[in-house]
Length: 347
Ligand code: TXA
Ligand code: MG
Image (cartoon, rainbow, N blue to C red):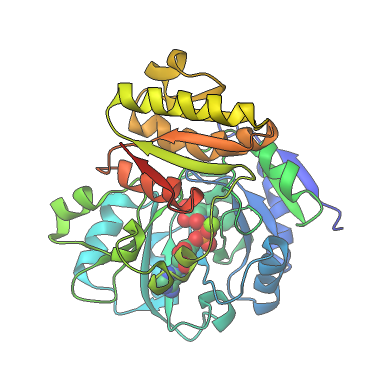
């Protein structure tokens, strides 16, 4: 067990002294969890192989899975990567700082352990002010995967981070809930046509308005073998709560009837059943119901939190409504399908 230094920091009134203590841990090669606008990240010095090793240990993560390197100023990208094309510059100007990660050819300075042995590097400039400040104070680029134990839902609330990671890292900064609640969009910029390897809040449609056609790695929508996913992280089981997740897709009334009859059946067997749905349908379900929100943005920001809450309520089976596959819906369905192991009941 590591003795974890935990600090509560208010995003609207940042205690610089407290940030400095955590930044010092990072610059000395230790690990610190901090909030970003997407999910909490588990950070270490991206240029220090020994520090990066601690990330894999804390998460129990396979070490062929490359990490995203976080920077606080746009021009730092040039220290880490080469062959940055015009399209990438357009995307940076529009979406950085923010929830967009771009993959470039890496420079020598980025260690193999950070890039998972690939010759490319994933880079993101977060917008969360605490994230920006801790990166700035540490003076180094920060490798940071989501701050969950490998395979679990990514944490979007400080409390969940402490529950899971206290004793596994050197520092934790607890702040408010993350704005977006889904990890950043990952887009590969190393070929002529950029390709989305992981959908997120920055959508294909938004990018295409600025730079023309953007491809989507077919494996992320379950259309091809997930084991061939170009982002190594996408091939592992992910976002899995302890309960067994099923997605039910169809007209509202049919979905409601189906889920309710499945709940009756399963409760007879003594199984505890939960439901995740749009708020407008909340009253219609039996069982333990969590409303995910009124629109896709809200569903995105509440999804991981709801999966974690379902575990706390010790649900054996979790039914979820399906959502539209457009805009952020694409990212929501991608995470939901993975948490369900692609089990979907079509009506
Ligand atoms: O929003 C986020 O991106 C959060 C916060 C903390 O910034 N971070 C995050 O990191 O989600 P992580 O490690 O959980 O996910 C990184 C994803 C993985 O699927 C990984 O395989 C992919 O990005 N990736 C990283 N470097 C890559 C590379 N060079 N080529 C292809 N995929 C890469
Ligand atoms: Mg992750």
